[in-house]
Amino acid sequence: MLSAVKSDEKILNRSMDWNFPIPIAYGPGRLNEIGTFCSKFKISNPLIVTDKGSKKLPFVSRLTTLLRNASIQGQLFYGISPNPRDDEINAGCVEYRKGNHDGIIAIGGGSALDGAKAIGMTVNSGVDLWDFEYRKPEPILNSSDCFPTFITIPTTAGTGAETESTAMVTDTVQGMKFCLAHLGMRPSLAILDPELTIELPPNLTAWTGVDALTHALEAYLVPGLNPLCDGAALEALKLISKWLKVAFDDPNNINARGGMLIGSCFAGVAFMKGLGLVHSISHMIGAEYNTQHGLTNAIILPPVMRFNLPHVGKKVRFISDAMDLKDASSDLVVKEIEKILDYVDIPKSLSEIGIPLECKKRIAEKAMLDSATGTNPRAAQIEDVEKLTEISILSARA
Image 1 (tube, rainbow, N blue to C red):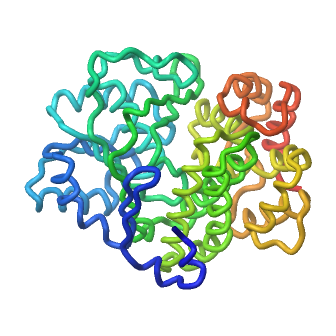
Image 2 (image 1 turned 180 degrees about the horizontal axis):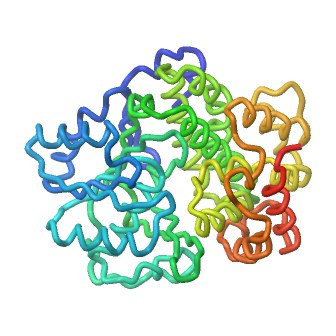
């Protein structure tokens, strides 16, 4: 799919349609086709789901205007936090039923996309939200056609959530994040329009970009053979390593924005294979302290890579090749990651974003229960996770 990109970057300015892993409409300006897409999928009255921080951003008003011009009704629901909560999902379901909606359009970052998925899983299915926790038996549905038609429009190049049926949601009673999933909530279409990411400020370009880098690295290191996911992870690493700094320095560079958006999407495809301890720890910190997920991942990434990379064999060489490094060593890979983090102004410790040292044991205990811990390439005991949390809080970079 992307071999032409390496020889001709101008292809990133073109519109392209792909069908793996779901239908994807890529290209600058593809949002303008939303009326046609809704008509194709017989959506006439969608619930538009975004997060609280995006409700007044230009892309939301642009979407609603395009829908209105296409004579499509729609209601905006913006009650999703940076770390979606179960009570917010319930509120979204109420709005969906009240408005008699016939589909969901999610626009924004990963929190908006995850919140929309969780709303779609529960609104018509008759199933409790937590019964969709991915390690539980698949729930019995009251209908074979109970999931709303779903379109995703990512406005960050970070989470890669636009093609997946999984959603991370915070249980407000336990103060923990859980992974919810059902194949019925796979999107009918993802619109990858790099023009939407031009509006990102530098800090969000950095935080979401390193989130995508983390997805690619952790997914590739998950043990086991999955050539499709591994290939997607390495291609994502190539694109992100090439374009993240460019997008950070030159926000209006459409090639950089397009390369990052595709890289993020590929990294999201890759983590179908699983993730690792960066996400285990980050999920629980986000659940307790409502931190920005990509930023939290970015800070935790170096110590976890120092913990994992000496134990993954030849994969270090493939990572080095993808990142265009001169040599293949665990130390060199970590140093390159730290150079990227410094370049895009990522803080060096979780304490700089308000995480206290006293939480390390509690966070470690919760992280041991996270789904991503089971797919980390190196088996970890609670003492290891507590130490990694402590390092991340005090000083995550050497």
